[in-house]
Image 1 (cartoon, rainbow, N blue to C red):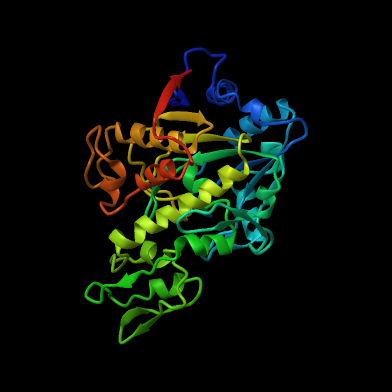
Image 2 (image 1 turned 30 degrees about the vertical axis):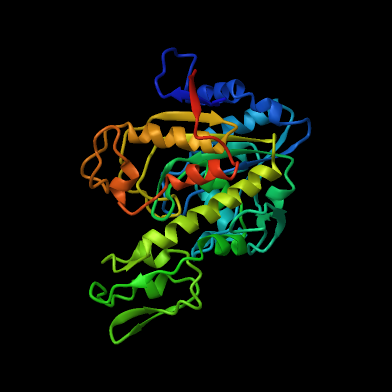
Length: 368
């Protein structure tokens, strides 16, 4: 049986209708009320965006989800976890400050914010999964103990995962620092011919494992946590991965973490994907680059694989924008994420996700 994915476009036909009401209608059509029991402490998993980023899901959209959870009898809270890389969100205090600066004050969203893995990202519980890479996965404590969860994901590009959607939001986003380290576990390498010795990678490395030797960057791999900050910040693209061997295992590890969250919240978790402000990069970037395709709409489903596959297909079916980081694959039907970075293998998220029982690639779009 095909998984149901509910879709609302961005066209407004009547003055009584608006984008917030469309989100609420999706909540109803996807029957998310059935996921929430009276007095459930219901986590709304979001990404608050890095300081300086402007493409994250706006707080008024999240407020629409809060309203529906309260209507269903739940007690919602909005949550994310600390980051592996350096920056203001790598502890709960800085993370909360960024969230409020980005509009997620209680007076706006009508729900408290809780950073789910504690003050310094060390609070978690284990969930047994018995998969290829992990026997168990580490899940942030306050997500672990939440009674139900609605996952709100901004669908966009990602340098390592190919794209970020529901699977990445619960796989990487529900893990504490130790879980993020387990998933990344990749080792960047420096092309000495391209390196100009600018030192940018040294500045951004959160564990100070890079140094300049004879005017070239040297990464001490034994201490590297694989966060990818050096790759993202190198102006000459001199730092890269062995994309063919490192990326597939990274994506599999991330997807196994997503499986752990889905198993933990079985029959108590729903997913929204927001196909708007579709940037080439993750919201972890402190900037928001030019969008690569037009805004599309909102999706809702109880199947994380199906909603990500549907989102991926919808983005790829768009005409790409020239003059952006989309260097190829601009035509409808061509892979936009490989047009940004030809080495990405984001499709492995839903291929491996289906293989391990996270969900199904076979979906049915139901338009509202």
